[in-house]
Length: 168
Image 1 (cartoon, rainbow, N blue to C red):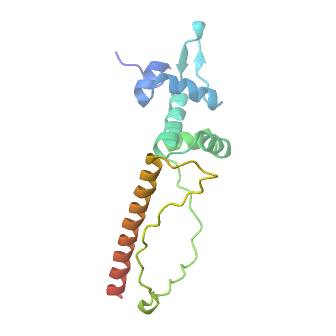
Image 2: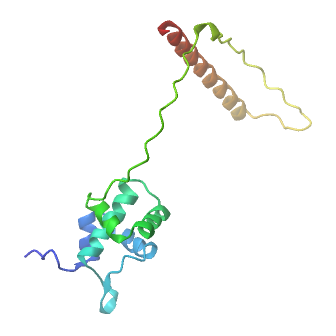
Image 3: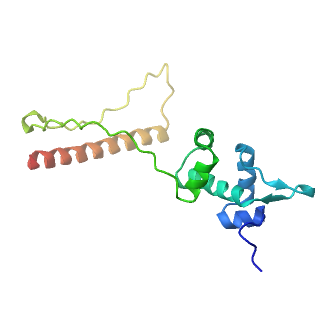
């Protein structure tokens, strides 16, 4: 027999409904003072439907929207519990941002101003033997790997520059 919509739920039932582990719900209780399940003898938690709706809103903020706990706490403090409950139910009003000013047009790139890139020859590492002990083989391998990555990036940039020059 299924429980009615207004019935209190245990923490395991709420965890199953929200798809969130029970220890996370207990953690949220410690971070959000607005979550107040009824505790009966033995410390067992029973969540009211409003508590479940609030937990759903908090889960949406933290997991779906990527908000931090401090950000969610601030949102709860500024907009109230009903706003966060509405977020969980996907009925929250979307904040309207002020219209942005007209974007400035970017000046066109002149092909005459593009200077060809010159290949850079790798320079040998110079080590002052009085200050730095000899570089080990691993350190030198990292230096050569980084130089190779930089050369590859330069080749890509030259290719992009050539495509821009051809399209203009």
